Length: 331
Image (cartoon, one colour):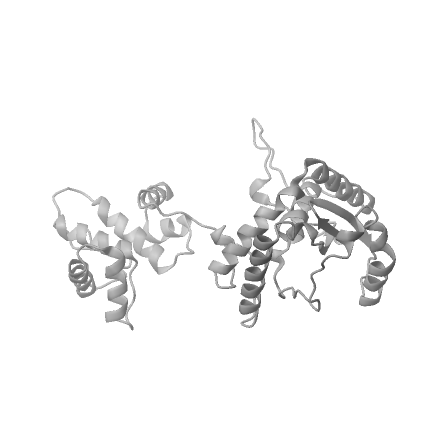
């Protein structure tokens, strides 16, 4: 038997508060939470449905009343929406199984109510002390770019990343158009693993690298890279740009920790590289290396790096609106 989330007394109180708020459902939901802090707090849509039920002569949540014969449609609607409100992460199949109506009907009800199955997004972990540092960094960057338009182009943005045999690939974007179902599979988590460590930089709209780093990267080996290999990678960069500005954890322009979402290499470059590399399964370390550098050449030739300045500015503004917190949803 289906369960009901609210009692008749709770529905009546919702309707009373909805009237007090002049039919403003969002205001009614806030007032209900303030008036009953220890009770279950209905979504603003519940107030609209409760009002419509009483207006049509029905008892909310039961389908009792009204003039139509048979099982009332509103009865199914109330039950499905109560299931979603009780557990927003539930699935259409689970709702169908619990309340005994078809998945097609459940989908139709959810669509009619304009509910969508939004996906979670993976973001970096932030510590409480990170928020003011990120906020201060973004404010200072925007101020510098506003006062000195070429400032961004003088920064050498750099980052390291690893490409493995079984790298990430987006299953939602991976498909094959066929007349019949070929039952496609993609192998993963192979016992035979290998990886390539990479460094790359972006300066004045130009990509520098990627450069292959040692398999096991230590502080000493990275220092050798900075001393011996990086100068060669910067040979085509003017001396003026090379000595102008750097950003680092210990530099005069402090980089906020745990902020890959502000680094163009992280939010743009490595994602583009890996999306191209992992379109097909990697067969060997040589195959992986060839794909990496082919993808890098393709990105360089397309001139994508020249457009990262505006993207960075948008991210700084979004970070400020989020008070230094996660801001991807604001872009």
